[in-house]
View 1: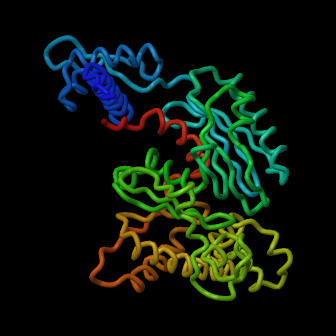
View 2 (view 1 turned 45 degrees about the vertical axis):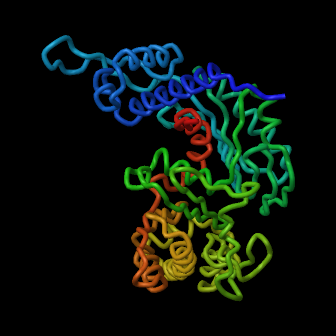
Length: 399
């Protein structure tokens, strides 16, 4: 039996896709260039004024944009300026870290309106229940059109199913993250690992040289080392979401601490915050007391000028640079963004990172810029929120 092609349906699908693309173009122009008038959007996009007006009317009804005042007249009536809706929450983010979990609500522009924090429980069920309870409270206290919940985790996840595959810090295996939160809140839940989420945050909230780059790599330094890969302005996740696990890249022997996988030859074992704290402990008289410090506290001591703290931090930066040089050779990105608490000490480590990369990369290969994240310690939280907001603002693929 011959299958007939319904040309009318194809035309309808194409028309619907073009409408969706135009809608996203207008929404992103308001996001990126607001306050902006309908006429200015039409001039910049070359879309018809009638199309712009129809889309804007729809976005006003949806509560995504709002009229925020009058612009300067160029000879006629003053144009009405448009901006993203400033009032009310648009997304909730849940950042589950090795030490603490943060639950926050933000508006459409990514400004955090309110947050709650608690110590991450080693029992997965308890942590998710507390996160769900906090999310429900934030929903009640922040009226608005909440689009969904984003969750960032320090381990391997499957974003397609919302399942946690493995988080080494707690030995969590094969757990459904999305289902419990969706049942408690009635909202759609998106899940990703912290490095991917941080990379997405840089893409949506980072400074222009990063957010406008086509390809870049986020290297996120915390208890471990994570990397998020942005290719053609999209997160590259690989099969089953397993791409970017470069923390397990072998770069040496006899590291100061074990990697989360148990090995002593992984990049994470040499360049993580845990490695820096252990190096510091070996340099001071009170080793046991020093091992109780957090990476952030070690950085505070280095910034205060303490010699052993600076030495430990700079030695960690040397190994961080070695790993980054491998990423530059392998992927040739425009930029490598370094995120996490180490960004506060950038003036102490930037020269070491640059030298390590310069020494390792062949002279005839393009050199990537190494830059600190402008989001800093908030990268994984902003990433969790970005999982929701990016879905709202992301372009629609043409058919």
